[in-house]
Image 1 (cartoon, each protein chain N blue to C red):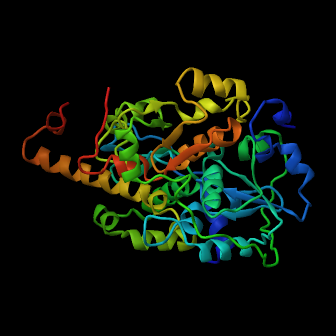
Image 2 (image 1 turned 90 degrees about the vertical axis):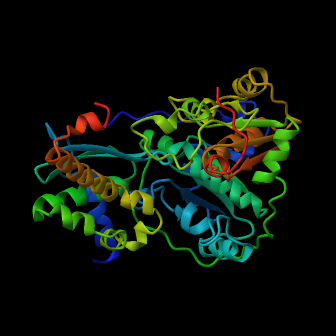
Length: 295
Length: 138
């Protein structure tokens, strides 16, 4: 019998500002048959859900479900509402996201849902990997739910999303920026690594003034769960000078890793004004005359 | 092939990859990648035979295995490899999966085409009396 990890269930003791948005594997296990809870798996790997998922979970794909098929933008209100209703989500449903890659795409979907004002969202701490590490059940049967009745608001891009022009204004004001990519990407070295011939941007480096705080530093490597608030406070506030009242913009390559940091700052530390720049380096690093810093 | 059969086929190639490994003294060794999502494929070509190494998502790795299997089994010529269009390849893998991740679906094919072009370029250089290693800085 394979050795399995024990559950990590100390979320309430970690000192988070909003511990209610994070749930443990045990919580999910206890709510597998709760009709008011809907599990949404959101992955980088497009076939991973089909190879096995948490019982009752439905799949959401960031490319085909959340993105407009023509513009580089998200779907509109009507389309997201149709999607959520098709997943059997009602007004009083609690949606729990989880996914691969340490929940990058789960927090990304969470963030997109928030743009539309969707309430009652939670994240499975440790994501899919934690569930698997604990030897919990995965199934291949895709569940079917009756049409839901949720209504969503028009998308509001003004509070938690940043566009390039706003990032430029932010740079001009010496606003706080967090680059959550790897240090090699931050330093602009990745474009020259032989094993990475195409980084998707014609210039390397980082947005002027950005602090390098790789997303993974918010996670305990052994468990894939978020670090306690005290450690996050040390990382973001003591070591990197961010304050909870700051206007902060986070970015990465296309906005998925930075949604993870957006989640940590907003819900775990209680920052009030964090925006995710989803254009990120694939926009900035390809933009003519966009200022770049490179050590 | 229906959706379930195609899915089982892709997952089988992911879990039991064919021709995964290296080729000693390869005519070409070409790395390719989608670093944004972490997919990496290195293609090896030796006398028309193909092997590959890689890490990444189910689709990118399954596609590499399927490609290597077909080329080795059917002794696909260089000309035929270069003629495989992205549309044909994505149809083969299944549009219901490939359309959502075209970069993952096409990584192996694109990398193999570069390997083929590398071998052809090296051949032409040798015919012209030029050492390919010198052209590429050693």
